[in-house]
Image (cartoon, rainbow, N blue to C red; front, side):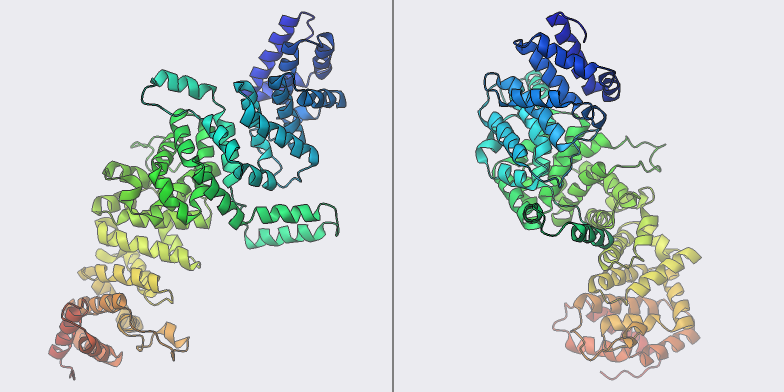
Length: 611
């Protein structure tokens, strides 16, 4: 760098610029050596008319300004030089490189990638830089200038007003999207790879992701802290109106509208093409984040599926997850937030569409989806929403047959996690856990035995939890829990456990009767006013009738038979089963047969049944 020969100077600066891209820590250490920034400016003074020297300096400063430790060394002389070069019009390549360096200085960048101050106010100088770079993308023909402009906009597009402006500029989006190579029928694979290597894919996808991203969902505590921060700001400050405007542009409605505009402009084809164009982990994770933002709007999910979005997400997921073999199957790899977000995007698609639509007719694709959903569920870094969506996606998959259900149940740590979440206070999470258990009880013999199909103290406890869930307020949870119990009562062991529980606590028959008719009181009902009872739910009536029928028909002891027949009568079960038969609209009613069989059993047990 201290050479006085132009060619050697350019080589030295080009080497250091390249080093920033492969080992930024080493490059930063070199840049921070004494007098290096001064040597860079000396080179400019020594060769004031050399475009090669100026461009090498601009590229080196652009790389250095991406790291906090190096930005601290940038002097006013360097800043003045960069500003001048960004405003000249003779050399567009130099102009773009200088503008990117200024953007990084203006916005600040994290040491491990693009991680800027998202809420920073957009100054007039920043606005000029945005317009400069947007113009370079739209009008410039030189690839290097476009790449520099895209990199700069990747930093600037975290600002709400920049997002809004870029999303509404169709000419900009068309030119931006054209940078991503598409595989053409006449092109060769080598041509496609070469085009992909030259394309600034990460910058393009980062701009897309920034435009489409929603504000982080704050917890109640985080929201309160944010409110206090806003209150602490100086009243009447000059920036107050701008901050409020930015807040408005970041609300869900504006983000949703930007996503719709991006889809209309062809962003989905761009994202899926990017996954095919590169194996870069960073680029693919950015694609996953962009797709997660787009599928947040349910109306977009069909379009994402049509464009091959689910397949693209599976490709990304398979690339980020370690291979599963006999030794690692029981181990749960720790996933970072960006990796979890890719799985979450796929889960959202799997929740609202049938597995056939999402994964296609190939069973292998269904099997491949189980592991990522199971990992998202058991990760300690996953939030409650992500766990809920994993449960919902797994529930949909488990409905596709016993083989799928068996593989889900065998996923490492999954059943233990579900059994914790089934006790969760959050209604939706508890419901989703119960629905998954219901499907697995019906589709997997191991889970059937785990919940009472085979006698053990542990299985009896799990069965009691399901019976208790038959009596909660949430209707879908009751449907799922009672469905699981109805399936389990086909087992003699489960029925014996329920009979023992009934004789000890007198709770089982009232809960089953309450499924058939809410007029039968239970412990839960005693805590509420039952004056306004809703009409019986056919699903609950059928499940309740099956549970009662199976339980009573499992009794072999004559004394216990008479005892439980009397308890069934006292609980009002005879009355409600007669009502089921009388109210049955036709002989095809699913509850009719178990109700009639139960009444027959009660008659044979010595009870008088008035029909």
